[in-house]
Length: 142
Image (cartoon, rainbow, N blue to C red; front, side):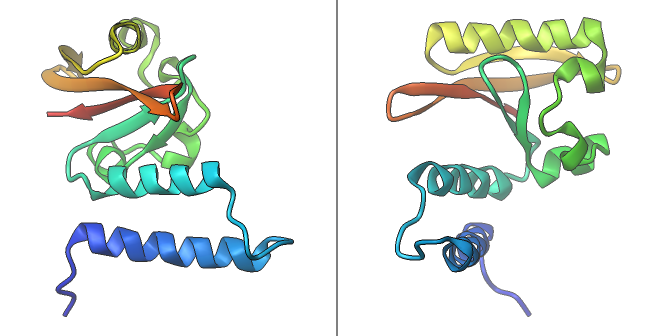
């Protein structure tokens, strides 16, 4: 029986990925800082039991967590690198994008309501920075 909390499980997965990365690296003593940060972000998103995602500033999906994939029956591999329009259609993606831009422009968390699959959902969106540089916008269904 597994008694580990989800965060511990994700940290162990990251540790394993780092080990694999180092083993495959030409210099196993170093780990690309950006790669480590992105693995950490993935671990944090995966711990959420609500649909959560990360998009680039230009609207390309970088990552969806398992809760998002399961709720909306979307293959994360197919969504990665795609825009919302490719998955949700033009009209809905324009609404998503407007709130993404509001969060990035405000430089802080915003709350919004969006209609998805006939249901009004409450979402939280926030800009994501690495060392002061905007890397995208994250969001979570509340």
